[in-house]
Length: 249
Image 1 (cartoon, rainbow, N blue to C red):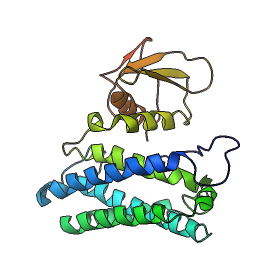
Image 2: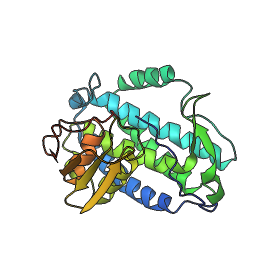
Image 3: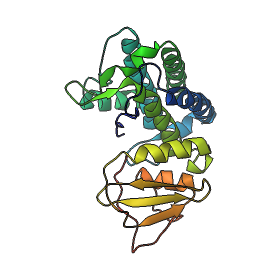
Image 4: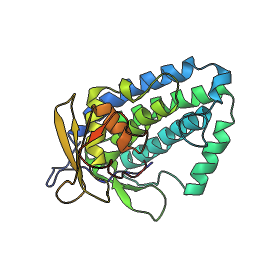
């Protein structure tokens, strides 16, 4: 997971950023879909491989639960006028995921559900002026605006839901999320500049600095999936020799 950079427009006044309510609405719906999928998995299927190398579905569910708890803690601290990192260290994060992934399927389901409720309550209780506070992913690292947390969580839920390989794929993402995801990916560094054209949304986005050297065309969901470093881009077309290089997410 790559933490996104701040998204506040220059000169944005203090208060709840205008994009936060929309992202929280999308997240509430995404949480419901995710919980239904996980609840519907037979216990024996939870330990089966996911689409992420080296991770089972249990690892993905454990990560989603712990990520929700970590971001809830960030929000709760910000609401008190404080700041706390998401994780104590990358090693602690990885160890906690590994440990929780070995828990019984019912415990994983309960932990995931609880994390969605706790995050939602924390976001709803956030004083408007505290969305502008800062936090670290790990101590001593770069700081990020608390206003980026709803999008961070939304991407985690939707992308990793598809990673479960349990009947939900990028093709099931709502169009509103497709657009949010692609837009958020424009803020990452790329070796060469390129443009994407989402046929179903009739929209284009530019990636990287400079004049685009290629245009990648496809449906928004397929573009979003490819921009996260997933899939082979077989559903996309490009007016160059090959698809541009994109970093994994």
